[in-house]
Length: 61
Image (cartoon, rainbow, N blue to C red; front, side, top):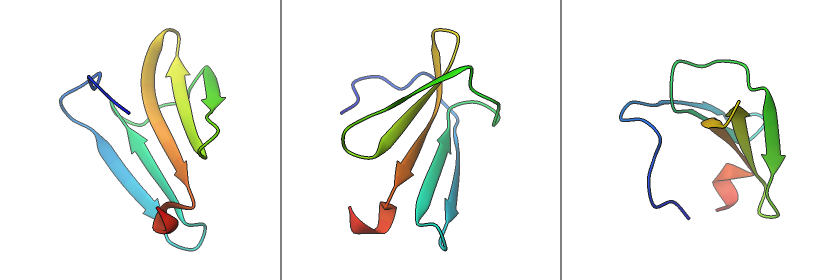
Protein backbone atom coordinates (compact mmCIF):
# COMPACT_ATOMS: atom_id res chain seq x y z
CA UNK A 1 0.00 0.00 0.00
CA UNK A 2 2.84 2.41 0.76
CA UNK A 3 6.12 2.86 -0.99
CA UNK A 4 7.33 5.95 0.88
CA UNK A 5 6.15 7.56 4.11
CA UNK A 6 6.16 11.37 4.17
CA UNK A 7 8.02 11.72 7.50
CA UNK A 8 10.42 9.83 9.75
CA UNK A 9 8.40 10.35 12.96
CA UNK A 10 4.73 9.67 13.41
CA UNK A 11 2.11 9.55 16.15
CA UNK A 12 -0.40 6.74 16.66
CA UNK A 13 -3.55 6.73 18.76
CA UNK A 14 -6.08 3.91 19.05
CA UNK A 15 -9.68 4.39 20.17
CA UNK A 16 -10.70 0.93 21.42
CA UNK A 17 -14.37 1.83 21.88
CA UNK A 18 -14.71 3.12 18.30
CA UNK A 19 -12.13 0.61 16.95
CA UNK A 20 -10.34 3.36 15.04
CA UNK A 21 -6.59 3.82 14.59
CA UNK A 22 -5.33 7.37 14.02
CA UNK A 23 -1.91 7.89 12.45
CA UNK A 24 -0.33 11.34 12.07
CA UNK A 25 2.86 11.83 10.04
CA UNK A 26 3.66 15.08 11.80
CA UNK A 27 2.40 16.59 15.02
CA UNK A 28 -1.35 15.99 14.92
CA UNK A 29 -3.02 18.76 12.96
CA UNK A 30 -6.24 19.50 11.15
CA UNK A 31 -6.47 18.32 7.58
CA UNK A 32 -7.69 20.59 4.81
CA UNK A 33 -8.95 17.63 2.74
CA UNK A 34 -9.55 13.93 3.17
CA UNK A 35 -10.23 10.98 0.88
CA UNK A 36 -12.06 7.84 2.01
CA UNK A 37 -10.66 4.71 0.40
CA UNK A 38 -12.87 1.70 -0.41
CA UNK A 39 -11.12 -0.32 2.32
CA UNK A 40 -12.19 1.99 5.19
CA UNK A 41 -8.97 4.00 5.34
CA UNK A 42 -9.30 7.77 5.40
CA UNK A 43 -6.31 9.64 3.97
CA UNK A 44 -5.93 13.13 5.47
CA UNK A 45 -4.20 15.93 3.58
CA UNK A 46 -3.11 19.46 4.40
CA UNK A 47 -2.60 21.05 1.01
CA UNK A 48 -0.77 18.46 -1.10
CA UNK A 49 0.88 16.79 1.91
CA UNK A 50 -0.40 13.56 3.43
CA UNK A 51 -0.56 14.41 7.14
CA UNK A 52 -2.35 11.35 8.47
CA UNK A 53 -4.56 8.32 8.12
CA UNK A 54 -7.60 7.06 9.96
CA UNK A 55 -8.19 3.29 9.86
CA UNK A 56 -11.77 2.20 10.60
CA UNK A 57 -12.56 -1.25 12.08
CA UNK A 58 -8.88 -1.63 12.90
CA UNK A 59 -9.14 -4.80 15.01
CA UNK A 60 -10.80 -6.67 12.14
CA UNK A 61 -7.84 -6.29 9.79
